[in-house]
Length: 521
Image 1 (cartoon, rainbow, N blue to C red):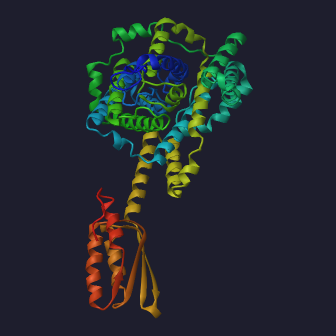
Image 2 (image 1 turned 60 degrees about the vertical axis):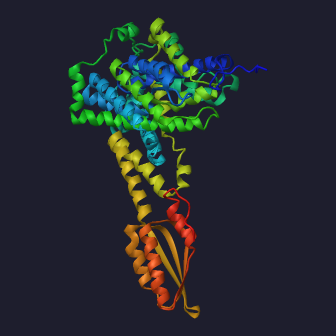
Image 3 (image 1 turned 180 degrees about the vertical axis):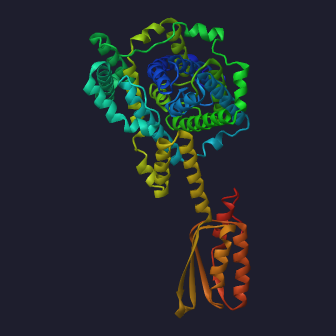
């Protein structure tokens, strides 16, 4: 008898079972994405339209082919600082070229099945990167919230905060008015996130904050504050190809600095996307992420964004989390949110002109605070002080220099930590003369680079003694050290001594690393 449960031939829920849930989730994600697409464009020193274009492509195009069905892609705060630096260095047209080639790099990485390797970045570096980006966004957008321009580097923006605040209070005028609207927006976001009834939290706090700021500005009519400016013909410009880079512009990828920019965007976007996909998988019990497919889809989306003048995209945890929490079941919710963005841009873009720039900047100040808050530190401490130090140094380098130098510094420190872990071997000796007994305790990794240490420790042992080797603290042993121990055992027995060691467990520490079972005794 036929089942009454409508299912597709793939075994997945059929459209009637999921459409209502996906429709509601798409509306929630649209409401979350709208202010963030605009705000991140401002933080990236790009036109508002660039953020909206990327949100549309991330929803409709990438959402249709993504390897993570419930992940939502769009402009990300994690790339805002890098894009700002690229705009300052090369100009907006060349940023489109950089994003285009970054997408091609991602697609190539996906085809070569490198998706899992991009996930192998130390969590301390990733969280340090996000925290550093959060600080940079917060200190730069603080000035924008007072209708002032950022002062340049992260350090300058940080040091300049008291001056901007005192100038607004002392001089009054539009800067003070903008700052008050920004403060009201932030207060509204915190209040809604903390005190709103659960039934009303379907409305995202950033959207509520922007709405409060917009209403306050349009009721009080403060003189001189800046409002969002959006071209009337975004949709028409996209369809006409007006933003396509020229052939000469594409050739700029041959310049080393431009190529480095493309590789940087590709690397950071890929790492953030795939870590986000892992986090989304942990939120639901549905289809798991296909990492190489996700990387390829992101690359295709970024190449399209580069051609159409959009921001680079990644999978973003705020929108993806909202999607899952709102009850999304399939990729339809992601696609629909992109359609709502497209309809909004095509039909009523003029409504954005009522939003004060201070309100959007306030949303980014709040976003920066959330990224920068060191909530991850207690978790990192479980894995040792070195992880916390890598996290802290990555942040300091990002804020004091730039994003790329900070991330590279974190990666180098992680590599050095890994090399130290694989090259550290402590051999502790305890002697019991009355029993002619010597206990050796191995701690660390017995590898080729530490073979001389192991050899010297064995050579100092008294001939004819009873040697007991303890390997409970040994993480790994390679074939060279196994051979050394085996040969030394033969020599030591020839002197009348004995060696007691769990050879099966010791060989297991070699074979586990190489993907095979332990050898037979």
